[in-house]
Amino acid sequence: MASITFAVDDELKSEMSKFLWINLSELIKQELSRRMELLKRLNSKEEQELIKWSVELGRKAKEGSFKRLLSEVSPKIRKELLNSMSPEERRKYG
Image 1 (tube, rainbow, N blue to C red):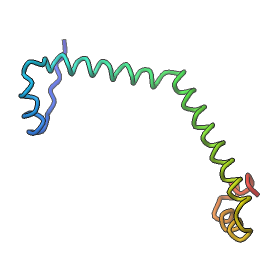
Image 2 (cartoon, rainbow, N blue to C red; image 1 turned 30 degrees about the vertical axis):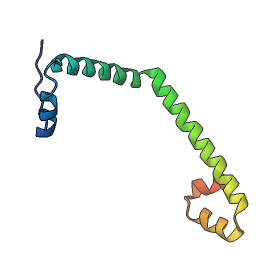
Image 3 (cartoon, rainbow, N blue to C red; image 1 turned 180 degrees about the vertical axis):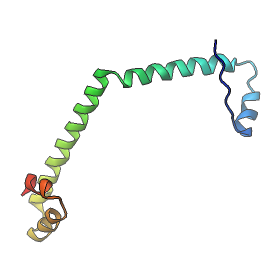
């Protein structure tokens, strides 16, 4: 089995020494295993598709809110907002 060494600050070491009955090696091993499993799931194809879907949904919601905002502001403010955008973005709302 491989061995890993890590450093902790003095305050944490002092706190850890209060819990000598805890097998820190086993605790850390279990926590690392749990986090590695989470990372594997986060990098799965299904999770990546869900992330892509949720980002797209957020963009559509933002676009809809911005269109509503543009319809409620004065023509002067609308023009200023649209002029601050790139030509590609401006086409969406113009």
